[in-house]
Length: 278
Image (cartoon, rainbow, N blue to C red; front, side):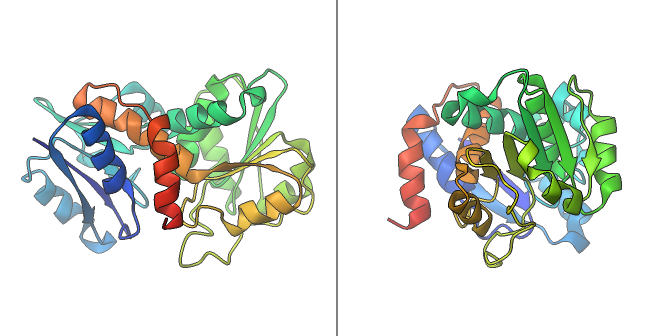
């Protein structure tokens, strides 16, 4: 009987319980997955309480992917390099942190647009938080030639590039500089929470300079088609949705917890119907 959950704030909108319940059913596993919302001012206290709940594992979402690390007993190599954790497993040695964000993103992107992965492709990441770190590392390992990072605070983008070993040549820049250079990229990935419900009228920057045929991705999944993606579609972009990444990274987390091999694709259409309220 697996006891699983999600920590973050706010997380009332999360569909992770639905995904993991589907995966448990698919694999014939009994268990529960609950939302464990923690307000920032009591984070440390609640993490100590969580250790008494005897969870088998839990996911970590914003704003705690980096803040959770001091509370863990060990990190796998990818989480250590990234300095961000989205999955924790309880073992006999305590809590071990993992990061499945980047792997989930690249796998879902490759399913839809395998033509992106070649040694001349260029990607732009918007944002430099925990999700961006995982995606940056995974893209640089996947054959993408250049992965640049734009952020409101350029220093944060610089730190991301400096701290994560990568084979690609990468530059940091402001959002204004990124706006001017949008036509240079084959892939643009929006990794922040801007545009998430209830603030779904917001976009982090305009895509006016976008080249037709560019792949534009937004890791926000509620709404499924953000204003950022709507603008991209109107300009002739090819779209990659946040729910595809969410589903794939959840599969990898579930593998870590249960040592099973669940499949994401059989759930994708059902998940999309869930998001659309069908």
